[in-house]
Length: 142
Image 1: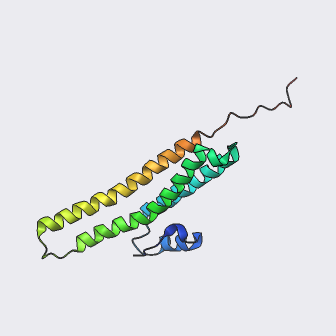
Image 2: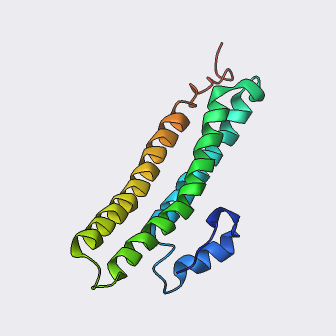
């Protein structure tokens, strides 16, 4: 499995990693990168719309969202790796301890995609809030 800072990868390299016959990056990192891109576009649009970019809370929030989503792409791979490690732990281990390690790892592996989904919802809400009423054309007005 490839351990990577996916946000540092070129688009072409990331696409190749996704296409490879490897378990990661899979749906978690790919969705996190997609959310990161959406939040970055939201930040760009907010910068164009802001009167004062340095103090605009919309810009700051969108920047936070894309950075956090990019980090979650890497966190998801780590969480998935922990599940694989827990599943592969020795059968000679105490079954209760092994079960607890697996439960903990599964909880971590579920928490990351949940946060990705929450960031996606917040990004969509933030982006939708930037819509402006369409400018009425004055060409056909008396």
